[in-house]
Length: 225
Length: 173
Image (cartoon, rainbow over all chains, first blue to last red; front, side, top):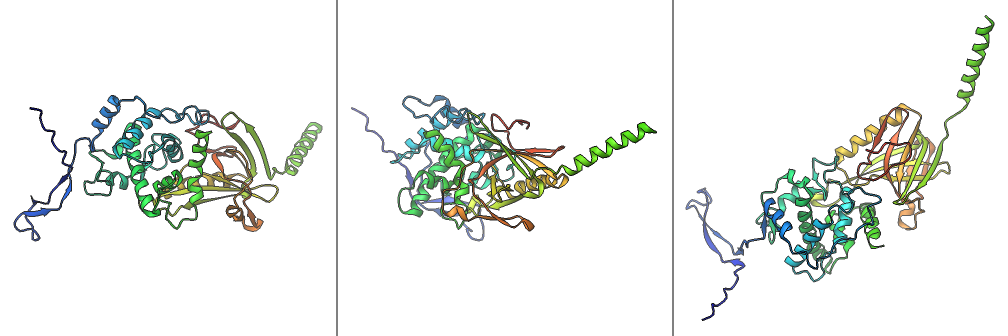
């Protein structure tokens, strides 16, 4: 008799949970609300990130445009494969109706760091090739945070200097920013609006959105020429 | 004695010639490369202004500042030159102070900037004016160029590490 396939359980029902005894919880037991189950592959550490990249099926994945920025930037095409793999990975993971274009990721990286894996200037607040902040790193590893649908674990600030780690995190964050932009605009955002949201400029009172977008726009135009 | 007299004439003549020769107020030389345009601007130090602009971004992005430099040209137009990427406040102000030292120690500087020099088309952006103290307020008429390096005769500051090339006469880091 054929084995009946098991239904994939993605949520956990409300359940009691042991917590440290405190004034608020003198019994040491609390009720945990219904929550998403942590499925394997939705909670990546640095080793898993590297393993997924190494073993990823590259058949049919879309690469960012090559050779358009190499005359200007030293590292322009160096991270194309990392961008291609992780953009494809998250587009599939989130079953995106309008998938993220790898050229958007490449132009974003160009505007954030000029493809420099460890820009000298900003080490105190934003780190690495995609200038991920300490605050963003925290959100991207928070089980109950806004990105809880897919998070990372045990990634340290110094790991962000490695583009093999920071690029997947940036693509995941861009995916999240695409959702928040859609929610703010009440429609699907354009790629420029996604980037403005990544840079915190979409709905801010800033008069300098154009300045914030200038470098991205130039790099994206060059890639699509 | 005669020899001494002659040499003093030569010295005073040299002094007179160099003394009368004032540094050019503004000069721009453009180099077209495969990747982009590079420009070497030679300008009097008092024709340069700087600012660290807070971009007023939301939430985890409220660190973003953008370095801007403004150069007054010989047509009384302000050229806008921006840093390539966002910086935090401390980094931006630190850079600005270092450039201030370069500007204040000599009357003439040379600046390397990148990108095509294009007139501003967007109507909104056409109304930016920059105050150059006693020289008055002047309109920004070109799209922002990208900062690469600034030098006086002794010191340089460069932000050109990620690029393939730099302007002739400047050092690529």
